[in-house]
Image (cartoon, rainbow, N blue to C red):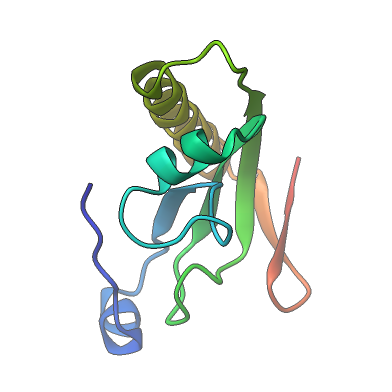
Length: 114
């Protein structure tokens, strides 16, 4: 996993929209190995969120969110694979909506996606 925090100066200089993806295990499972923490806690739903990047960490307007049910039958490996696959699907859907010009800013920190 690669994490890079982009500064406000970088974002202003870049001048284009940046989209981020992350798992939906935050804020419940922070730090290293959040998937293992969630698996060990027996969570029943996993998720992913795609949002615009701002100078506030993981606080940009949300474009897309997805969830999927997991069960006690999952192994840690299948749990992680489901989570990673969900992130890919969520990011792809957010990018598709964005490229099709179906994402509009709304209020201060929201979007409308149609």
